[in-house]
Amino acid sequence: MRDTVWGPAEFQGLPPWWLVAEGLVAGGLTVAAVTGSALAGAWYGIPGLADGEGGLLCAAAIVLYLGVMRAGRALVGIVAVLGVCLALQAPPAAAGAVLAARGRLESVVVTSVDGAPAAGPGRGRYLCSVADRDGLPLEVRIWRGCGKDTRPGDALAVVYDTGGTVPPRGVAAGGLSSGPLRNLGGWAAAFVAACVVAVVRSFRLDHDMK
Image (cartoon, rainbow, N blue to C red; front, side, top):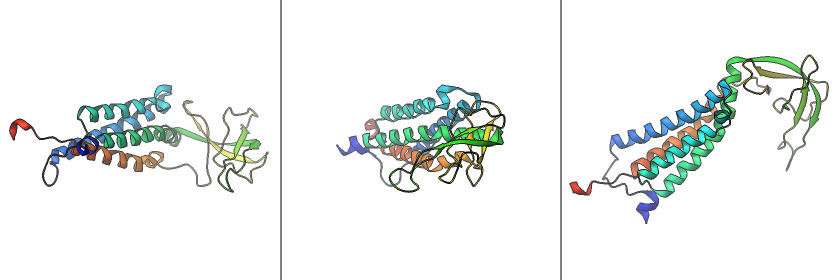
């Protein structure tokens, strides 16, 4: 039962270096595929990639790979959960990277403010409807830079994608993030670590060589 849940890990002492390398490569390639597909979708305006569907397929592929290797079921489940989380976090990070690379900063005027704190002060999100300098309303509502002190008529900074594939986004008080994809670092590291453990513990000795 333990072997089925956590994997057999049929080696003595430290795991073989090539087994660790295999886990690192499998996890690293999956992270690159998830983030790369989201970034390509945001840059070129490909809906199936920009909304994370491509990343979910990459996560499913590594789960299938671990299943073929007969890795421990608990470890496969952990990899699956972390893979889904990574795939869902990648699209907004990729959109931020596109805006940081080719965005144009402009000022807009607030026309209305909606939203209120939920479950306590400071925990809700305020949404500002805004219009550009020509008076045309934006189709999206802005939450970055929109707070409880914002009033109709106030000016907000909004960054536009000059390529037109990413919706406009408000700019927080700290300005544009210099490395939006860095926010995925924690998820990526946890995912790769889980892949390494799953691959290492899936190792079975060749019974013909015993």
